[in-house]
Length: 212
Image 1 (tube, rainbow, N blue to C red):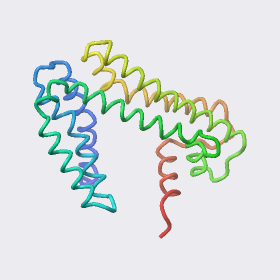
Image 2 (image 1 turned 180 degrees about the horizontal axis):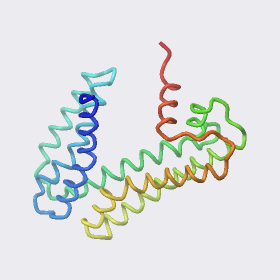
Image 3 (image 1 turned 90 degrees about the vertical axis):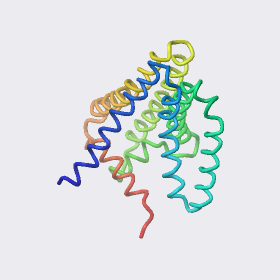
């Protein structure tokens, strides 16, 4: 039991601790070295994980090492603009999600939320297909609006104000979007068996896994 709890406690501590530390560096804006370190740490960590899992592991690790050397060489210049690194990280994540949902709305492709629905329910009615396409559009517009809001706040408001939005409001707004969609679905499609988002993600992951 303890072994199962410890990883979750670490995740909770990271989810809470990182935004607090990031906001502190943005609010004080005095220690550029710490600010840049906190800003680039998640990017380097994600890059390391992706490189390690890549089929071309050693090539990707070599590319990552070269990027780290370039980062080290330009550290002095970047630490004066570490807020820009935070913004690029935040907007980059939102744009990736925007593209992930939006590209599935292109003619001839299956909307992402329809794919999730099929993974959960196996058989999807025409009415459900229409609804899931509309939900995919809603998520696409949501992430586009979030990226735009982040950009406007970063360039037009104090850095501390943008930091509150990026570090403390992004996840709650995404959670509210999930909750709102869930209740709309219950109202629009009351006859369907409703499942939680984690069940949908698990079913989609299992459906997408290659056969052994």
